[in-house]
Structures are given as C-alpha cells and as structure tokens.
Image 1: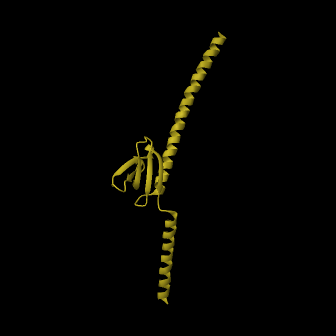
Image 2: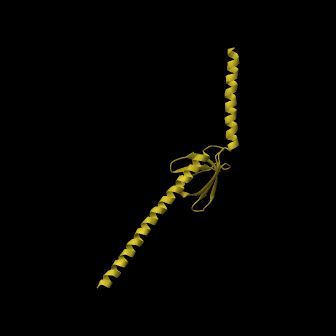
Image 3: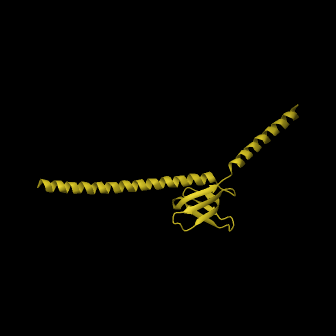
Length: 132
C-alpha cells in the first residue's frame, strides 16, 4: 500500500512540475517578445522620421523586406514609405524581425552643430562691433 501511495505521489509531482515549467516557459517567451518589441521601438525612434530616415525592415512572416523612409512613428507601429513608388506600409512592432537604418550620419550632426555655433558667434561678434 505504501509503495502504491509513493508511486502515485511521484506521478502527481512530475505532472505538477511539468505543468509549472510550461507556464514559466510561456511567461519567459512573452517577456522575450516584449523586450524584442521595445528594442525595435528604440531603433525606429533613433532612426527618426523624414527624408533622411532610411530604413530596411524584415518581417517575421518573411514575406518581404520593406525599404524606404520612416514617415510616422506610433505606439503600436510605424509607417514606411517606399521612396520610389510613394506607397506607404504600416508595420506593427510585433511583426518586425529586424530593423536596419540610417538617420543623419554622425558627421552631419557634428557639421550642423558646428555651423549653428559659428552662426551664433558671428551674430554676437557683429552685434558687439555695431555697439561700439
């Protein structure tokens, strides 16, 4: 009788352990997907929107690769406009496998900042010269 009770308890504990590991695995999978979506959001926001926001998007269903400019960024997804055809495609973050893109190159950002600083310095110098 004792052997029978021990074997039943062993089977029940194995079933419970198996069930709990499946539940934990599902939670882990959901967490991984949430992290992936957040990374995609950050990459798209970093690329930005406009003519210089070139992007290549790979979809999870592997149907096609989208190339173009990011024209809108939202909470649930973003819009890619094909530069040649002007056709827009709305893409949900959860459907994206990977994102590659270019915003303004770092040298352009440095050049714009330097130009702005030099412009301000020139205006200050001219104003100081007129004050004398």
